[in-house]
Amino acid sequence: MKIPHSPRRVAGCLALCAASLAPASRADEGASPHTVTSNVGFFSNYVFRGITYTQNRPALQGGFDYAHAGGLYAGVWGTNVSSDAINDASLELDFYGGYTGTADDWSYDVGLLQFYYPEHPKLPGTRESYNTLEAYGAVGWRWLTLKYSHTLTDYFGFNRDSLGGGSSRGSGYLELNAKLPLPGEVVLGLHAGRQRVRNYSQFSYTDWRASLAKSFGAGWTASVAYTRTNADDSLWVADGKDLGEGHWIVGLSRSF
Image 1 (cartoon, one colour):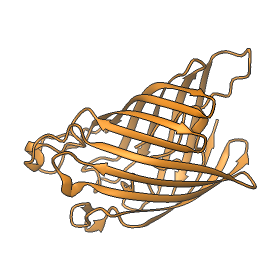
Image 2: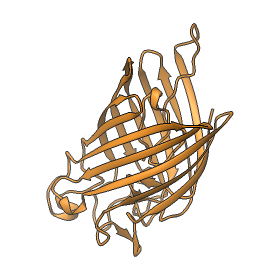
Image 3: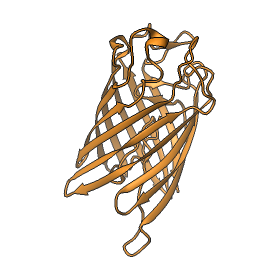
């Protein structure tokens, strides 16, 4: 699940659930206002908001981004997933678009993000789809960014038919991120987030992440991260595995 970022927060250092690849403008003054970029990466795990969706197995990820100098952007990103974590699915595609801008040391970013599973998997024993649409808004100051994402549909199929507790539309994820530049083109990333699942508070949880990323030029970035949650391991479990336990993630990515 890719989380879009504004150009001044390009985080090629981490393409985790999501997080972490972003539309970026490389246009020089006087050049076309339209920019198209792409990215590809190989990671030891796919972890989104602290939860593994490849069952601790490797992930091949990549996407394409369009950005306009005026602030509009759109993109698509994909990754393999485990059929145990997302029932009967092997692929996730994320479609997103929004508007971003800056003012002195401040920045903002608003948009929509659609999580889509082409094989149309359903929650076990139900007809409920995992496909989810979120609206998001973020404000940043220098190296700090505060962001909130709000579901406009049920949260990955959680509703009365699947779990008996009503609609989960209106669930939200609040996160605080820091990207601190270190010597040698290394970036220290720090993250804390809180996932709230409306009408299903037992599934709500907090996650944390710390990462280091090193840029090598020509678009190459190597990264290592550790992430963990306090998610209830009796609920966030698949095939007997705790999805929210601590995870080490190493990766190598390139942007074009």
